[in-house]
Length: 340
Ligand code: CP
Image (cartoon, rainbow, N blue to C red):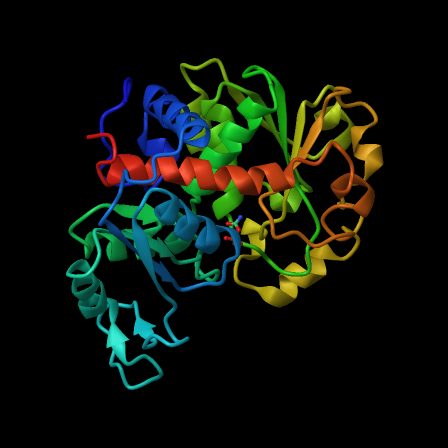
């Protein structure tokens, strides 16, 4: 593979240069066109899921199988011992084993480890630090993959970049990351990852949200750093009409308000009157005629987005989910030496 060095880990697109990301995308396209069913023969991937999944779990297993390798899925508390992740606690509760033993044990069985560990959702500073995922990844001596941590979801972001390329969305196009209504306070991982991806792709990015849902300053700063040097830009607004004019992409996602992080009652109160933040056909009235609708899935119909949008040719959500497979195959190929 040209243009990139082999990866040692895959924790965030922010850790990679534009050249390294584009090389991964080239490899993803090559693997989509030309199967390599023996590339990772004999290699085993461990998949440690602390949280539910459809796409990430199924596409990771499919990716390993299509490259000739295999995978082991562990879901703590569901057939696997419930695992403690906190340091220094007296383990007299539900958890039977600590990750400090479990992950080094897994290192004897698998060649790489993917970990899904969502945000705690109670302490914004702790979640922004992503210390929980980083601490667990450090316990594994080989390559590790972030399958969605408190503040990042690089597999989603890489697949979405490929989807934008496949759809012919110009790198300089207008990309709107739009907050959408949802009954629950959702994590910041996808909005942070997708914002950074669009900025690193060089896009003109607008984050559209009600005022109390402005993304935390470190998330915006990281995206602006990614935009720097590649012609991208990042701005925030609550003015829907202004944000959507000329948009080439509307990427909807709900997230918790940083103002009341971890306070479910305050969050519920804040969302009263925000049911109109459901993406419907009107949102596309002043957008570019070729504007596409993106969402990472799972999505709640007629809460986050109207049926009429999701069922229209504008929607690229299934293509996004399919591109997770090719993007992750490229990552696994690099991490586990398929290129050598
Ligand atoms: N988008 C995404 O990560 O989907 P899952 O939560 O189903 O894995």
